[in-house]
Structure formats: structure tokens, C-alpha cells
Image (cartoon, rainbow, N blue to C red):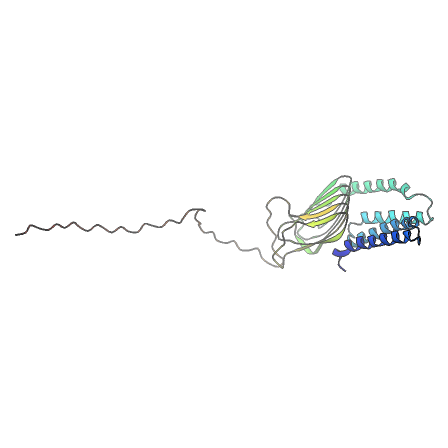
Length: 270
């Protein structure tokens, strides 16, 4: 099963389960109240684990979702007497601290591995590494912008993007082939790049999880020179030839005009 089909499969299976529970409740077979008390925590745990499987490099968001679902599940089962929401603010403070630390220790522009966390604000990262390898991007109620337009790709280059009520944008130069897959849930991801025609073009794989948010890959503004394919030399410069101005006809020398014949007059008759 491909990761591209994971999102519709999870959403469709959940809707089928909800319909079955409602039907059994109408038939007085089960109590929907008790079922929902277990369903929502299990759904959060499943969502967090699925997101972690899709974007392991952007692990912060999936781990928090899994932890929240586990707390709710333990509270529903009676193992933990305190409410899980009592832990919400400490966890939020930890997230803010982690995002500040991540922003203050941002990698160099030549770094081949990039990590960015945006929580309630935005983060911008740029890499000009000629052997770019990976990136882990997390946007929770914020935005992350990764600029790779001056970078080159190493084999197997990959970007993991997790957006929860936020947005992530990855800018790439023309000439790259982008393979975008992921898990959308009340959100989406989009590949806005122009497909490369060269079968040997560098490949960037992007795995995205969009929960009430969005992830996109685009070329960005401006003119960019595409990188040569692996193992090939840059194309040789082509000679220039003078071309006529658009809308005009080429000029040729006029044909020679024949000289007029001398005038002849009849002489006097005898």
C-alpha cells in the first residue's frame, strides 16, 4: 500500500466505524457514550503513529499527538485520575521553548541537513549545500519556509513536513523532479513545480502530513538556472547568429537594371 493512499484509507475507515457504532447504538446493542470515550483517544494515538511513520524527521508534532491520545486513553480507562488537559500548558511551554532553541541554533546556509520548528510564528530556512540530504519541518499554528533554490541534491534527498493548523512551503529550482506523498486530514498538499522532462534529473522526495493545514512545493519567484544532471557536463554554449528583427523581412540587393537601348532614327531617303 502506498503512502499516497493512506489518508483516504484512514478517513474512510474511521467514517465506516462511526456509522457502525451509531447503528449499534440505535439497536440498543452498545452504548455510544462509552464507545466514544475510547474511540477518540485511540484515534489520536493512531493518527500520531501514522504521522510519525510518514514524517519521522519531523517527529515533534506526531509525538505530541500520540502523547495526548495516550493520556486521554489512560484517563478513560481509570489508570490516571487527573485530566489530560492538566498537562496541556506544561507541554505547550515545552514546545515554545524547543522552537526558540531551534530558531537560535539554526544551521549554516551550507548545511546539508535542515531542521525547523514554528509554533505560533514563522521560521525561514535556506540551504545552498550542493549535496543537500534531508530536512525536518514542523509548523504548528505557524509557518515554515524552506528555500533550496541555490542547493544541489544528494542521492535519496528527502524532506519531511508536518503541518498542524499551519503551512509549510518548500522552494526548489527548475529542473528537479519532485515526488510528493503524505497524509492529508482536513488539509492538503500540492506540488506546484513544473515536471522535469529529463529522466536523469535530480529527485527530491517530500513526505507531508497536513492536519487542518497545508504543504506545497513550488519554484518561487525570479529566474533560476537549473542544475546539470548527475554525471553530465553543462551544455556547451551555442554560437549566436544575427537574426532579423521580429516583424521585418530580410533585405536583399536589388536586381541590376538593364541599360536602355540607344535610340535609332531612320535616315533620309534618296
